[in-house]
Length: 196
Image (cartoon, rainbow, N blue to C red; front, side):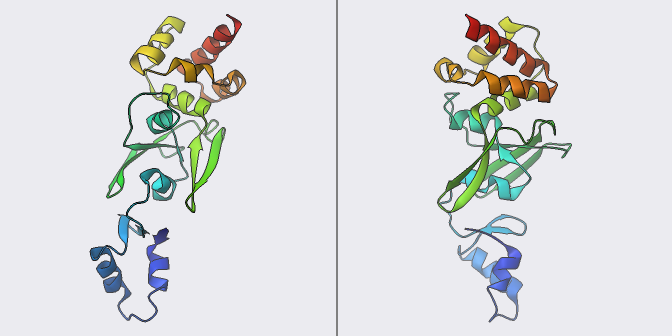
């Protein structure tokens, strides 16, 4: 369970020096420090369940979400999340792993986020369509559909069967929110792909 230092201290009513007791609980492994002011009580908690509490508002996306959905063959260990209006990329190295956060456009941010619950934790993750749009948004602009195809299936090694399961209408809707050449090309490619 995730707890803040304030909650942890409020549970220490019988201790005069709550900071010392808190430090002792961390040292003894009763609490695991995630970042300043945030602790976890279970060392076996899956890292992605903590991402939204470390820095936010945010939702899991980019490489981690693509791996989560089976789009890419690699197992991604860094939990990658999307934010908005934060201006710069943030990285947190914790005992649970490394977490990175980077902006997507504010207009695109609230769309296609799925709220999931697992073992008493709730977390937010991009839909399949949103995860691929977020990833393409972060890459250098490409020029045409041939380059997009190469990027998707050669460079990113996107699974073609899973790619075919993407919802074209969702991609179309999202493409207008990013103002990104790559995401616009994806929508164009999906239209072409579905008409073949």
